[in-house]
Length: 250
Image 1 (cartoon, one colour):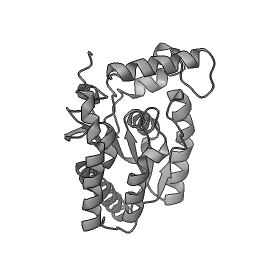
Image 2 (spheres, rainbow, N blue to C red):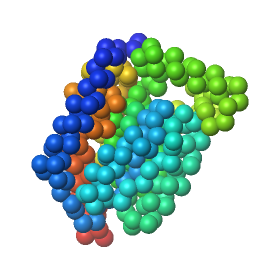
Image 3 (cartoon, rainbow, N blue to C red):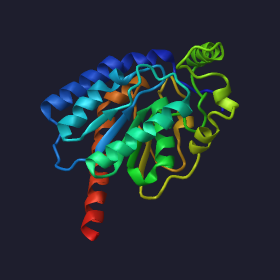
Image 4 (cartoon, helix red, strand yellow):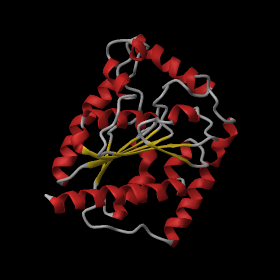
């Protein structure tokens, strides 16, 4: 899949997207719900948990218990990250007494998808924000150069960094299969993309096993875009309502 990322200057919209979200949440604070499902947030490539601080704050104001990935920079081998986060998902589900909603941005969404495939009994919702699940390297030329540079460091033995074997080798074979595997019907899965995304080819985000939603956003700005938060409200409420119906029927 040839990259069709939009011009890089479009990423300069982040500040305006954040300002719009701040104005929106100031004027209309998020509606708090009792028994809101627990949420695990996973950041994008080379980003850390701090990149999702605004979303974490918003979710907590809604009443959600929020767990972070523990990533300072999302550059480790995908299999190592997913294997570690499996325990996080299970512990979060047990502690909260219900299923978990996974929200991941960019590469974080791909990691979240793999978790949903591995632990469907623990996952009630999955939201992928600009995540190239159909082709992980369908990214802009500058980002692809960075990926190759990081892989070279991993090949040289730098700890905590993926290597070139992660793309085709045995270490991430299961992970690669999980990016295209069907999702359990009970998981409310949404794949968000933007045709003006300057980092990821939007076509690589069209997960055939998820509801596909388009927003007019920068890539980095999806974590602070008002339209994304409106979508999150719908997904989170739907997951909670489904859990309530199942509990009532039990």
